[in-house]
Amino acid sequence: MLTIYGMSDSGNCYKVKLAAQQLGVAYRWVEVDSTKGETRTREFLARNPNGKVPTLELEDGSFLPESNAILHYLADGSALLPAGRMERARVLQWMFFEQYSHEPYVAVARFILYYLPPDSPRRAELPRLHERGYQALSVMEQHLAREPFFAAQKYTIADIALYAYTHCAADGGFDLARYPAVKAWLARVEQQPRFVRMG
Amino acid sequence: MLTIYGMSDSGNCYKVKLAAQQLGVAYRWVEVDSTKGETRTREFLARNPNGKVPTLELEDGSFLPESNAILHYLADGSALLPAGRMERARVLQWMFFEQYSHEPYVAVARFILYYLPPDSPRRAELPRLHERGYQALSVMEQHLAREPFFAAQKYTIADIALYAYTHCAADGGFDLARYPAVKAWLARVEQQPRFVRMG
Image (cartoon, rainbow over all chains, first blue to last red; front, side):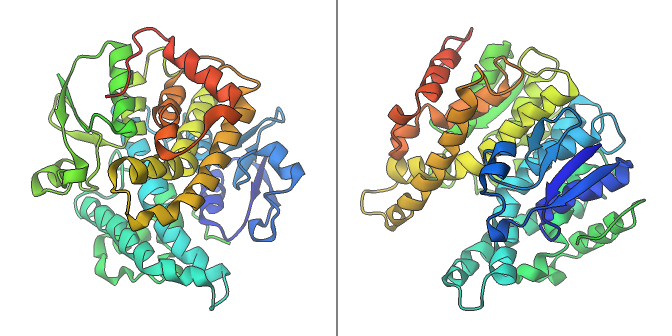
């Protein structure tokens, strides 16, 4: 059986849980709290030298880190990852967009407001995080005004990757009212078979 | 013929040029200087609403952004991207590591020192960028002390993705002398058939 090392209220970890549930993959969940230093222990660094969750342990005892690489591994050969060359590239386009242009702003703003104390000096980062996060949401809005999902006109792991931190963007101080197409897409994701909520 | 919109001294754009050369793919290169605002024009935003190079234009007139998604598209079906499910996930593991844990530090330090004036206030970011960039280089060193390449024991697009900004890390003030396995790997990449330098 697969083991997922993850933190239940992390969007990156939730991605893996959601995909595993929707694919009907059996797994064991091991809670690892990065806010308590549990990803920086010698034991955990032996699993992932980059010290991050989620990390997947495979049946042969090897480890696979990086949420979006795990999604790709789990979904390969399923309806959540189309097989065509361009369709796969489109799925990856949005997954790289998520990790480079969305997560570092939308998820980090949430981290600051959700996990750090109200007097944290990191609150000074919020204006820039909001500016960049809204840029990412605008790119998504523009796409979703024309297409129902991010790639291949259907629900894929690109949607799972982007849903993870978009659905809880309000935790980071983002107002989604300006993004009706994003809100309609969030609802479409929540209607997918075997959908589970974060947490 | 494919068209690559890119900036010649950007590592993200160089990745695409290097892969296209090594794959023997014919392309037209259109120089776009993001430091002069050329990725934020109405015309360019119609190609990539996220306003970034590289962006690939396909023969049917559609556009594919995100350097690592472009690498995946170009290399699909070639020796640069192995076909096995776990091998592909390993290639992607390192490509997501590159975009999340390496490029935002190693490339951004280079951007500040290489493109901005010596009195730029952004130089204040350098200590944190160096700390995080060295963390990424240490993760690479640990892997490369045991393996010749990042995935599948052979040269793949994961190596191209990580070579792009590692080979010019000194531009960002990084000293690679502490990373002998990384240096030996850089030399191995440079010995690959049809290798071309950045620029």
